[in-house]
Length: 77
Image 1: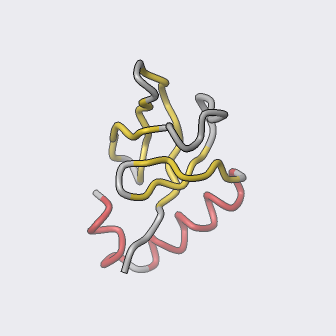
Image 2: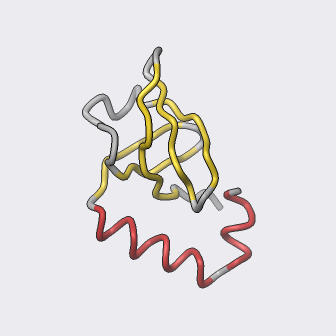
């Protein structure tokens, strides 16, 4: 099963890359599919790509749900 996890963009980098925070872990992801994404936005991340910009409330609800199932969160970090 594949999951797209909400992440907050903390920095935009060169070459369409962004540093994101995923459940407290920093990762670099591609924003090729979400060129409109800005610092502070939440994006869904799957396989190293930000695939969609999402509402902060939706992102938080999803993060809260993932935290309820630690076995899901283990695969993220």
